[in-house]
Image (tube, rainbow, N blue to C red; front, side, top):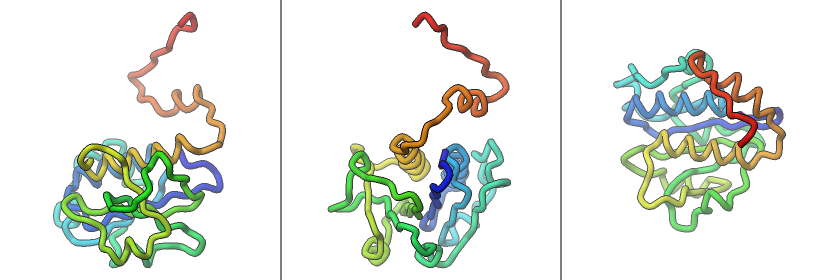
Length: 173
């Protein structure tokens, strides 16, 4: 969850899979992102995504734009997430407090001009590439894990689990 004073915005370049966009919305909701931008037309042609099971699209702005670079706010750090030579491995990356994270398409790459304009380029050091939604989840989790803000973990578990989960770990472990 993004804490006070922290802001993360997601930008997707011409996503093709409505399932992936739905899963990105779910990740955005899980980690406190309130805005997702996308470029291109492929998503709009297949916009009836199925994986928005928590109805995140009701509370998270999903907006088609002509340019992700034009969405960067004053003082906001542009971070491209891409398998690019010279990119910073995600475990070594220090997340800015206000970031626009840009992810390439499932079947392509971020344009070189956008990489050149970025304040940082990071990659997830996997063997091969992950799909779009998995990459967004890993990036946002890494951002959360590196935050110095204290989390009330009991409250987080209670408010995050669904109504069918009332599990408790016994104290004698």
